[in-house]
Length: 372
Image 1: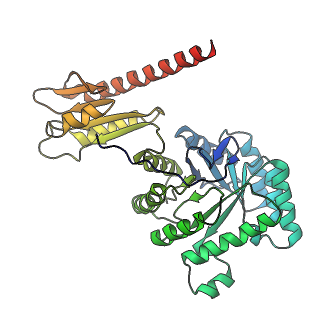
Image 2 (image 1 turned 90 degrees about the vertical axis):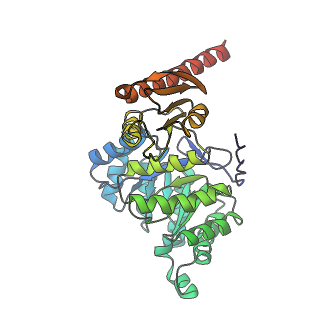
């Protein structure tokens, strides 16, 4: 098998968003943002719990008003995931959500206003042990930088970020992460590459306003995949105009494709052709839906014929290759047994779940052995 390329991650300072480490040698975290009305506590809590179920490491919540800040405190008490409070301009909201248990403040110190307000927010973050995220966006650059550069560009994004960094440095506050997002893939790539050489803080990767599920997934995979291959990036958010749950799934899929995170069932499937001995597409769609509750890393290969099937199936934890009269299953690289057409989905699900249970049992035995 072709040896995997080892990605050398950029060295960065580590911070903590709640219990989740970001930067340093911590796993690259995946986050999303709620799209409910924050004042609707029940709806927001329900959405955050759905995000938790699919593995979200961190969740961001918009807090545009003081009423939303009050609601944020109620939400914080009902969910487990670390919450980032997204605030713009009003420093009093930042102070309020810090008191209400925010795990991170997304606020740009240069946008707060007077020096005493900046000092108050930084001191509150320090007192509560809460990091700050500097979030620069190509669509909301400072007017001065717009005049200087004429239009959004990577240099403008980086200069804006460094201005905010300078303010935090002035107060000797180092617990922060940075993002420099654009909707343009090339601008995003260049901005993060330039910033990565000038700061030691962890970087939050994302393509802002990436678009619909399909186009946004492609743009994010290209931009973030390129940066991650270069070792740049400590936490990611896939911005999609769809259910936030899909952002988490796509984020983990990007990381899994680069072997940066191992989570859930990784389905390897052929696109299908006239050689297939069963309906590959329907089979894998059913399997994906049935197995989405699994967090353990398992490779499942589903190949419709004997041309590429045996090779792919042998490399997976569980595999199936189409054949006549019956399809052949594989476990841990070895031929296992034949499977009838009508039993394909249920049998592959059983095999995967049996594999997962064995992994859990082995892990439990290891924990017991280490404790003795």
